[in-house]
Length: 251
Image (cartoon, rainbow, N blue to C red; front, side):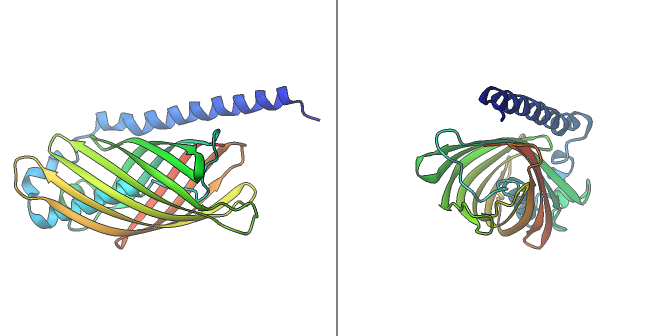
């Protein structure tokens, strides 16, 4: 029989290894921006028209809202914690000439932390990067139903606010998500639907970009090592392909 001391030691060792991996992934996401040109400023001044700004607002909304969930089960109180690195990948809107000139795929990286409060409520905090723009935000998640049976899904809803700040613009995104997931050993499938509403405010121009888009995602959380997960998901946002990858600790 495994002693409590050995179990605690294994848990602490797993947590340290996972946090080290999270730090490595965060550096991988952050460092490339120093070696690239400014993807926003490259084409921003030359494409300040309503169509391009609306399309950029939609793309930003998907990059902010896309990696905001990976599980439908609310965290418990007082020890429920989920800390992870999450990345979003998006097929850029053909009307988004600001980003599309640098490639057809855009991406964002986030560090997201959740903490379980009483009443199946989770507090969410996020910080990230979208190319050379800073991003941050947070919100709340509520567990509508928490399942203890393998074949019955847990369901939650969440509301989030996200801010993207760049020298050339500010953008705000409000996201809502409905997510369901299954507790299958080692593999935890999930599916969700969300809506992202984004307003983009460029500096030095009266034009504002606005767009709202429905987002669908399905994926899995691989939990081969206890208290850790590797998330892989994909779907669509307003007809554009999106992808999601995450790595973290959850207990």
